[in-house]
Length: 85
Image (cartoon, rainbow, N blue to C red; front, side):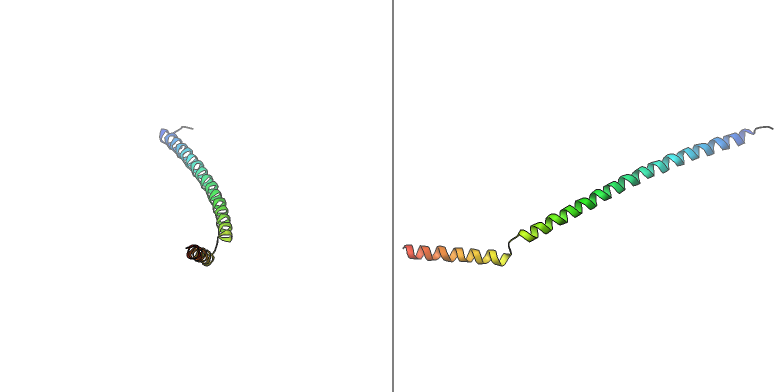
């Protein structure tokens, strides 16, 4: 049984291609894992932000109430100044 040099070269090239493919797949797997982790963090941040916005919306004063209080304050100040003179 003789070994052909071309056959050995082809086997070595195929082994090198397989190693390159394995390294590439491992790199892609790592990148996908990192993207999955970032996606999970983004989802948590978005959920937290939505809760904070909802809390702020529940505690804010409605604009008509602020307008009415400002008008009452201005009226009271005007009456006080008119009676004071």
